[in-house]
Length: 412
Length: 88
Image 1 (cartoon, rainbow over the protein chains, first blue to last red):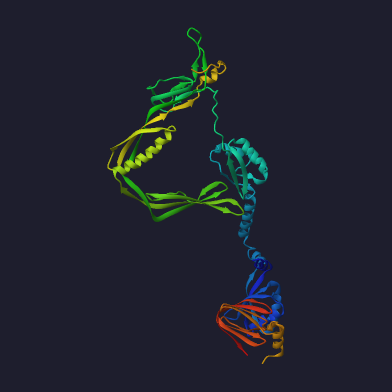
Image 2: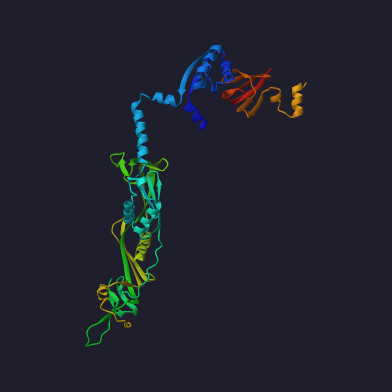
């Protein structure tokens, strides 16, 4: 490898020799210390490489051996420059490209954030922006790594550790999030227990606060079940209340339902093999479409996006994006009503489960449907539960009466 | 019958090509041949290479014969050899 580079830098000449004593020409060259190589037979004689510095010495050898020498090619750095000397635009382009990469590599063009899942991304981006880690920022103006880390962690509570890696024109921000400790219930703070959803109250166990509803009462979402506002006065005396942190368990009969339209067929998508790819060029965060429009004349298609970054000792700020549209044929396979109901039940049960309180007990479920047309049914799922519907709800009274109430009377 | 140089080489355990000035051939299958201590090239064609040595002319026949390296005392020929013989 290095040998080839040095050979190129020094320069060499590929010559063809022909005549009576070509083999003798080679032998004499070797004996005179002329370095030759790449000896190949040709139609007339043979071709070989000679160093540019030795080229003058072969004249006498040629004369002696009565061979003729023809220069086939001059190779080397000097010859390369000589060849392109008059190609002004090429040279200008070359210089401009080199200058472009030299200048652009001094800037950050893309900021990539990894590891942030629960952290507020807008806040994180804003803090990075204020530090100077942003597109178009000069790399040398960035503060030291420890300073960046400190400022990110100070500005974002959920971030335990952060580091910015500069990879060419890309700043890769690695984030480690804090594992937040669970909220400790402040037993002194005023709150009510309210209904998370509507239902009929089955049982109540009040540990702190005043019972606001009775068993068998019909409650709606948000209704207060156990109040933290506890009266502490006797009849005939001015009203006086104590505000406490309501505690207790309220079980209720609840009902949840879902309705949705479902098709009586199953769709499968098969790729036909036809497809189109549209490219766009991304230069330093700005995207330039290389097509006027990305219209495809396929009825159904799959879309795939791909990103090819040009890396020259790190990301160069240049990226070729491609969007591939593959034509597909959608086949519809009919399914029975029972199968459609099963699919609907699974889907709707999963949706209902998301809105249930923990440790809910299923009492029963009922699924029904009506035929909308030949291909569609409307499915309704009703599910009834015994559910602990009491959730803490902070009342507004608490904040304005904290200063009024100072007594510490036990709860009723 | 062994000559004096050959006897010395045998007795002293020295390479014969050093004492007797004869070529040393290292052949890798029928694809590559490395010749040390040669005198010069006599003929060079894609199917035939004639090499002068102290023992006479070494003729290498084959196809696509190429001189991959050539120095003052050694050369490397590659190709597909069919015949290697001395013309003494």
